[in-house]
Length: 543
Image (cartoon, rainbow, N blue to C red; front, side):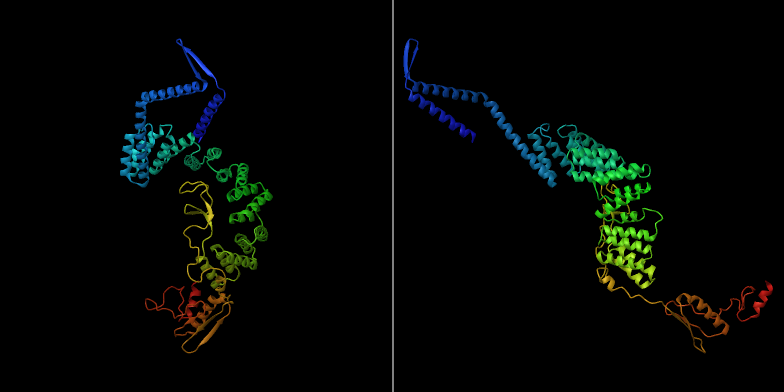
């Protein structure tokens, strides 16, 4: 477009110039070698323009002829380079598709058309082809060669890091990652690997420093960087909790400023405040995070901040948490547990049933079983709640990479990933009932067996000659009454077979004494023969 406008402007300028000369006629006289040449100004201007154009054309022709060999060489070189890049592109696509044969063929063609020192992608293609063919030694040699070139250093270090990790050479992988992070802190993989290695060795200060460098280099977004830094600060505070509680408290509070819902940091801060007898600040920290993320560990720590509290005091604290987060299963369950400890069975049952209706979980049904055992002792109802707990989904726990843990950890023990633990239901657990009619909604309470009254037992003694019935009123006296019945049967000398049956717990029947092995009673004077009452008198004489 610019060229067209320039051409139009030049034509207009020439036209304007000739029009200006035509409006001002004149004669131009030139004396050259004794000859007089006269012409008008318009003709003279036309001759000058023609001479300039002729000179330019002649110069272009001479220049074209002079530079034609170089132009030809440049044309064929560009053609060869284009063919080489086409082969290189085809080879990379083949390597990505896993076609090692075609990748090798295109690599050889590209190397013949393009110089390898001018195009490092040839080394990349050869390394990929070697990996596809399983020639890892050759691939490592290629990556090592690339790592020595400043232009391909990052790519070579990445390849060496991957190969070292594959072989399990963690120390070599760590060195490659640290080298890449020092040369180029903006590389996400190098910074992440170096960060995880430093965390595994407990070098929290260096890990935090590296994380700050990543944040400055805009490798990580601000929310992600704040979260990871809070996790690192929490891990550091956990290590300082026993040796320097004040420092651990400051670090934990700094972590809470970055991430307000980090439960482990709040627990550490509350514990340090509790050791300093600053219960008000400890309670404030726990209440603040309870509003954001209700967690059982937060509730238990909050209820036991002050040692020596009675069950009613802990119940009041639990009700305080419920007022901060109403209509929440965790709030209901923690109040139910505190009410059970305080022997307030009515409130405990009401809160536990409300939690079970809101979110049927294993913990709620186990708590109902404990309440039933402490209040009524009804075995049928206890077994009902225990069965519902077996069928209900599991409670949430700390989970990382498929592994469950009772406590939070900054790193995954399996993969070493930072901030891997999450509070949720473990994978692989059934999120519903195992069979029809299992724990879900109102069906749990509709299938609850009625409360049974105090049980009584009837013991029947059926001799051959007469039938006598002995009634035992309290269940707790079953054993004593059975012994008395046996004594009466022995004194009466009943020779018939005796049966003792019970409606709840069968009592062993009293039978006649077994026959002695030698055909006569034992000689031990301490053993009484029921058939000889005089043995008692003889035994008294001996003692």
